[in-house]
Image (cartoon, rainbow, N blue to C red):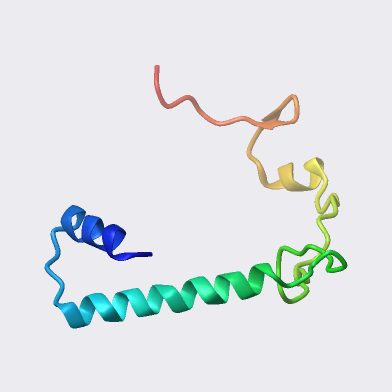
Length: 93
């Protein structure tokens, strides 16, 4: 970042920075650019790409389909059934 870009950003964001604040911003961004250059210089050819820094393990059970109940057992308490479904009185005529 340079003074021209900083002045343009001040105008776009309707800011009025003092000279000290401008110097502080420019120094901060110069430091950030140096750190970015240092990171870009690191050879990462042999480093495996990753999504998470730490390994992620799922702590939930496996999603396995099991049949917990039989339809006939569930319908034992129904007043009436028809074709495997509960039969209920009609509410709307």
